[in-house]
Amino acid sequence: MARLIRHEATGPQEVKPGEQSAWVCMCGLSQNYPFCDGSHKKARQEEPGKLYCYNRERTEVTEVKADQ
Image 1 (cartoon, rainbow, N blue to C red):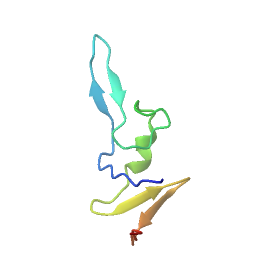
Image 2 (cartoon, one colour):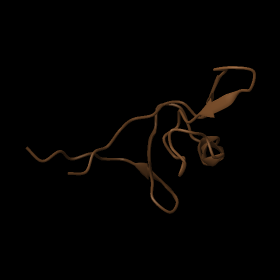
Image 3 (cartoon, rainbow, N blue to C red):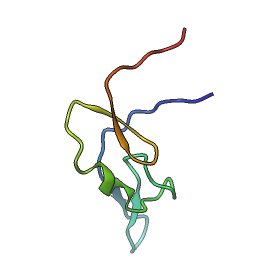
């Protein structure tokens, strides 16, 4: 079953479990999830209030249909 998950963050979250920082993915695009791999850079140009889908490239979603 496929799921759509909304992530509104466009950057990572720093956590410091010890002396060194770790960066946790908050955008949902990382290939190394839950850790940041820099993929959030793709989300920098998103416009607030718009919905996007990422496959190989970013596509704006203009209509969402849910099967019931």
